[in-house]
Image (cartoon, rainbow, N blue to C red; front, top):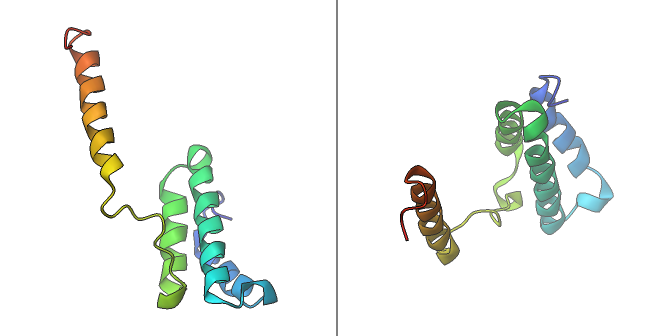
Length: 101
């Protein structure tokens, strides 16, 4: 669906999935959204970034506010600072031919 350029069908699939009995609670719909996003991320090497991202945005338009899952957001995450510093150090090593110590 996404790989074929039909990402606009993703919200229709999401609406049909949330009608099923296994997706009746808010937590179950949030878990469904996490699985959908994981699938979209796994599609990136195959179809590129744009189509899965468009599908996620389309699904987000029809998702109820209480069903939105923000567990992938990185607020107040100290490991990102460490990762940035390590990345800068690594890239400076590559650019300067390992002369930085």
